[in-house]
Length: 485
Image (cartoon, rainbow, N blue to C red; front, side):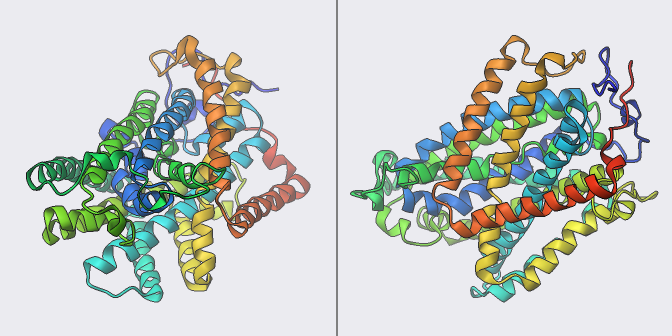
């Protein structure tokens, strides 16, 4: 069997060292790589979209499940960073599993990642349309209008992603800068407002709010357990930086740092934001039933102008998150197509000579998104978006299992990120966490969303089976890695 490990001495970040002709342009600096991961996580977006569920499921005290999710996702990020430091290629988990296990297992990793990126893209852009743009423009709630706006957003993002990776990096950097600044300002502003007006209470931090007396509060799948989904649904996508490794400068250094750093930054910033929001609630019952509690809190404490400023900033964060999700999805499609393992690979593997971007691979998620917005009924779209939260947890669990299986034969890359002697302990704890995360996500879920997940996995399994029957050579081996630097 060919040695599928990366170079064992020195550092060689070129795709040529792994058997590929370099086609993508390296334009992303260290902050831009960080912005790729942070923009996908998007603390403001995640909390804006899930805080109402937290209040109605577990009450304000539910914010203290955030550190649990933060710690668990950080463990996973540390494992992911270990791989990113050793195999800096587009396709991230697909490449890691293909080279360190076998191409069939790699294909499964790639398909799962594709599923979570494509569902995540639709979730982000549809939420941007319905929860930010429509209220900001004074448009009454309407599903058809939201879908039209979603299509427009997808088209703009695809245009930017096709135009230049440098543009994607710049837009993400601006989005991240705006998001961090507004969250910091809001944390300080809310705490000052509470101190000056007295409207709000530190006691909210231990209040069960509207869930007080709930019989299933501590039950399996019940109130307090459901609040962990806020952290789980927000602190994901940090591996996007690894998916764009071939476009990052010195990726063996910048990508692992971006992965870990984005989770740490988002975890801390998110906790501070949650505390400030919760302390600033003047009437827990009223805010919990408002439908848009974050906006309600800001309007009450800081006035309507601040509410509109927030919507603008959250819209920017939404757009940045959707843009990086589309770009990351395109890179996964490109990586699998480059090896002849994705439907339509002959078209999807092509990189434009001028833009140095895979146009076909970018148009694919755009096309899927547009078709979904047109043909999928309302309830089915919601279930699809809900089901999408399961894919990251499943994928991360598989990545951790892969690491535990191959860690002893992983080579050392000089100067790259490493956990050293703590790697096994971290990986074992990360595995326990990913199993728990899947259970937490499945417990309150609907049968329909579970069926959708199973259906998408089955669709991938059918294509994999067709390759095993009709194009077995495509799964024979990866291009061999160079044996030296």
